[in-house]
Image (cartoon, rainbow over all chains, first blue to last red; front, side):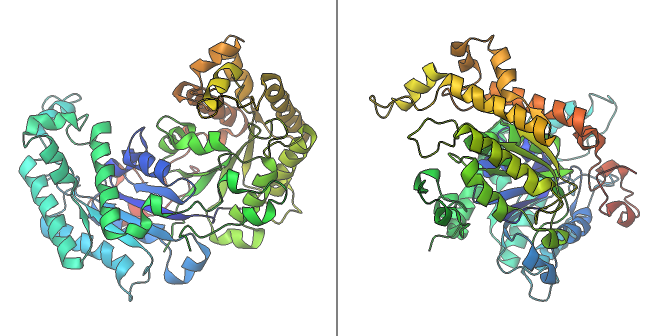
Length: 258
Length: 258
């Protein structure tokens, strides 16, 4: 037994995606907005970088010949970099150039006709990592170990965010610029990033509210047919069901209105 | 392209299930607790009764020969009755006896070896509808139409809840008794149900907190192997990955520890 009634939005990423299921997180907000239209599937893996996410992707997504049996992924968000940007000697560190190559590879896995995972119906969004508040993050990591060295820098994460923008232009995928949106909201003052993060690295409600807004804006601008207001529920609203003869009104429909 | 990495918890029901994606709703809480272990799929259809949910079920769940291609449903919650208990002449009304037959039919569709949808790996929970606060519900429905007749009664919904308990005993499926838990919490005073509902019929954060607690309690007692603390993430925690040779640590695993 399994479910194949609704297609899906898949969120691929690190802890900032995994935590998206928190109340008012971006996964919860998307699930609420798309209920009865698209399922939201969270493939956020805390601590993972782009090197490690590629084999995860290959085990999570169906190859072309398997796709007919499974729900389609209508929208895929790729949101990594917060760990790639960790400083050496951290095992999470991925050098900037390879980070870019990895992001491009993830896009090609979905978008290239010669990829075994090619899925022409899947729309892609690349997200930039949020800016890091090193003042707040230092306090967080020293709670357990007061001698621990700071493992991330504001300027380094900023470079990784810039690299996402470059890769997006190169491969032709829209970029949801979380970094800039939150940096602007904080008035370009690192300490004020604490408005949008509970520990300097991860987002709080207010941070996720901005991310959700930016994702919906990117969908409206690039994939307007996928905006939740443009879709109809798979099963009709109850007050459109004829209680005398409900059968015909209870047939599964496409979410795309005719 | 599609996802088949994680098995699922499926929530079948009416608006009280559909609204489970709200912040602190029971779907959001389950998704957060089971992240990286089981996906949560919401099949709540606002306004639907058990008559209408049966054809929905048949279009949402795979038949035996299709199951091999799809994620398994490890846990299925069936939570209906709030609309079946609407009073005639409402088109949502389902007489008490047929409501019981319908619930038993839903259980048999999953649990009977002769059902095309038979799924021996799917664990079931039946939930009772919450008690209705007619004082609060009258105010809600008269906001639009001050002459509208009250379409639900406290005692009638109580009978439907009692019927779920009886069906559960009859078919051998554990019952999550939402009705009793919330009625007890309200001190057996109908007006005090407003602590747990925003409109007299649907639940608020505090109501969903009790529902989530009761579901986890029922899982612990009846299906302890499915408690989220007993499961391991499909993909290892990042600090168990060897950065020098990550490949072997990035293989998909069963959520059930060896």
